[in-house]
Amino acid sequence: MYTALLQHIQRFVSLTEEEIHVLASYLTEKKPSKKEFLFQEGQVCTANYFVAKGCLRLYYVNDKGIETIVQFAIENWWISDYQSLERQIPSPFYLQAIESSTVIVLEKQVQEELLTKSPSLERYFRIVAQRAYGAAQMRIKYISELSGEERYVQFTESFPDFVQRIPQYMLASYLGFTPEFLSKLRAKKR
Image 1: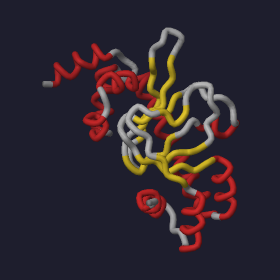
Image 2: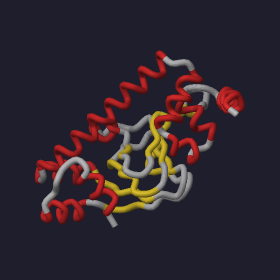
Image 3: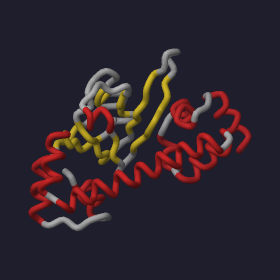
Image 4: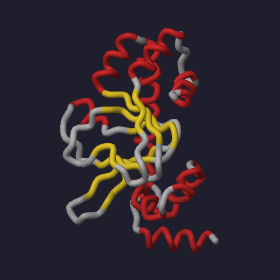
């Protein structure tokens, strides 16, 4: 059941059989259907989610009712509202399955206990967090320095799997422009 996660972990650290057994005892699996929420604005995020299969999005709705996507996650990616999770405060975000998915759930209190028991898993989560933080920094740089067209080209070259899997209006939201602008870009590329 947790093969995808174990393979992902083994890319970064080695686990003993005992650590694998302990890890498996702490995890649960959830299978959200398409459009199902794992949490919504105003709820406290209680877990970290590893996508074993499927695609999720983290987004917020502004005062004008417009959705802005902050993050996507496909297979082998972690996703959560880390501020809500860490501080146990209400989230301003929604976490929703874009397609029927399988996620491995690591509850906050369980994760803390697990990480104290396994230095290897502590290291794994540090590496994953550093990579995610680096990606967030680059996204901010791209948004502030690249034109809409350049952001689209950079994204499609870096993440070709996403382009086929997510609706175009969601891609436009993530890249910071309107679906109409994205349609013009795509027509221009043909």
